[in-house]
Length: 251
Image 1: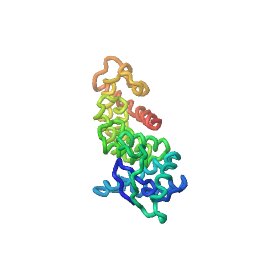
Image 2: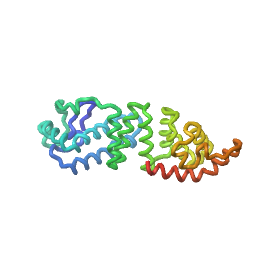
Image 3: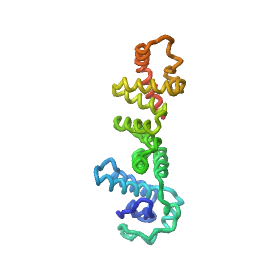
Image 4: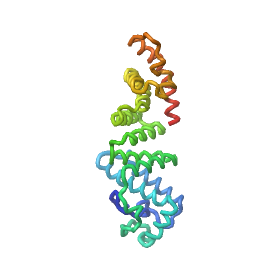
């Protein structure tokens, strides 16, 4: 398979190791085979860097060929460039402006969301990880990766790290605080969970999620001391956890 640098023009048929004129089903099957083979999570160290580059090229090639209009353009552009035996070849750069422009981290993020909408969570995860690698300072990217991992039943430690990173980038994001609190609570870190819930109450005492949990400032009886308030929060723990799970499933 030919190597293609990020942002440069590529021959999508070479990348997906298929012939010009392949059907939509053949294109999809080849994409899934190669995406599974080169998914970055299967590699580490220097090999992970190579896998990320290949996975990114595979994803971009699939983006071109899954769209009927772009596939039609590619068939005309690359019909003479692909050898009859299907061996990879580096073709001359085509003139399509859609492929000539360098893609931004947000382009990869948008592709990730589209893949998730299409229920292709593996591809969505790989694409958002590319976006994070290029721009690690976007809270939305980390939150979306957390959502993906929650959907897949991924490693909770990584989910927690995603939420912690997002919260560092947006320190007053109450919803992220509460989602992170739920995960802390699920692994027995009650003190950290309750600290986040209390902080959320201080920032947005009547936030919609706190209202649903019955944990707004106005819900606390007058005259409680600190110890009594903490006990009250703990008493609401199981109710909060159940509600968190419902909220997370709903997304």
